[in-house]
Length: 339
Ligand code: KG4
Ligand code: ZN
Image: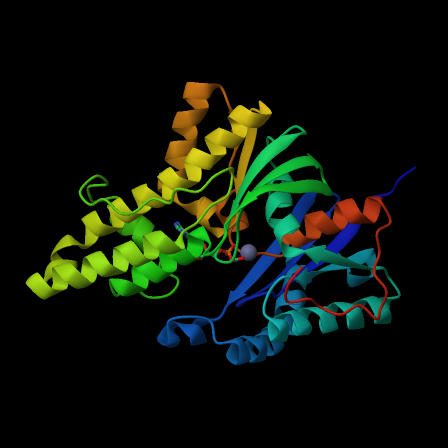
C-alpha cells in the first residue's frame, strides 16, 4: 500500500526565505525568514534579496526539519519554486533544492509559484480538518506580482480565464500607499488604516475593460494626481485624511476585483470560489467575498493568513500532488523569472 509521503518545500522567489515539511497534504512545520533590509529602499532590492536568501536558507531548512519532528532521512522528495520571481532569489532556492536532492538521492520537484498560491487552499493541519474547495472551482489569485481569475479543474489543471493587463492588485496597494508615505509593502498598512476611514469619501477611477481582465494602472494615476492637486491646496491633506484615503482606495480596489469575479461566476455558473495570494489577506476583500457568498449562494474558501503570503507550505503541497503523478524534474533544471 501507498506509504506516507514526506515532502520538503522550499520557496525563495522574492524576499522571503521559507521552508516547510508536509506529510501527504498535512503541514508539519513551516518557517518564513523575512528580509528587513528592503524596508529603507521602499521596495525589494534584488541583489540584497539574493544575498539574504543565501544567509537564511540553511538555518531555515534546519529549523523546519527540527520543528516537524521527523528525521532528515524520512524526506521523500524536495519541491522548490522554479518561478516566476527574481532570478537571483530563485537561484538560491533552486541550487539548494538540487544539492539536497542529489545528496539524499531523492526526487526533485519543480513548482510554479502561482500554482502554489492556489493549492495553499488544500493545506491540511494536524489537529483540524480544513474545508477545501470541490473541483471545478474559481480562484481569484491576487498578489504583488499577479492578478488572475483561474478556472481550477484539478490540482494540476488550471486555466487563466482573466488577468491584469498592467499592474497587479498588490502593486496598486503598494504604489498608492507609497504616494501617501506608507512603508513597503503598503498593503497591510492600508488595510489597517482603512478600518478607521470612510470608504465612500473619495472616488477614484475604475477601469472600463471588457471580459474578465483587470487593469490597475489607471487607478494608480488617478490616485496620484488627486493627491498632488489636493496637496497644492493644503499641505496637510494626506496627514489629515489618511484613514479616509486608505478606506476609499481599498474600497475601489476591492470593487474592481469583485466585479470580475462576479462576472466569472455568471459566465461559468461555478459557485465554488476561493481567493489566494498576498492580497487575499485584505479584510475588505474578505468581507466583500463573504457578503457576495450570502447574496449569491457561493461556497467560499479563504486561506489562513500565514498561507496567503509567500510560504513554502504551498510549494510543499503542490510538490505532494506532483509526487503522486511522478512529475519529477531533472538535476539540470534552471529557474525561470517568467513562467
Ligand atoms: O503573494 P505575496 O506575498 O507575494 C507575491 O507573490 O507577490 O503578495 C504580496 C502582496 C504585496 O503587494 C502586499 O502589499 C499585499 O500582498 N498584501 C496586502 C495585504 N497583505 C499583503 N494587500 C492588501 N491588504 C493586505 N492585508
Ligand atoms: Zn506570491
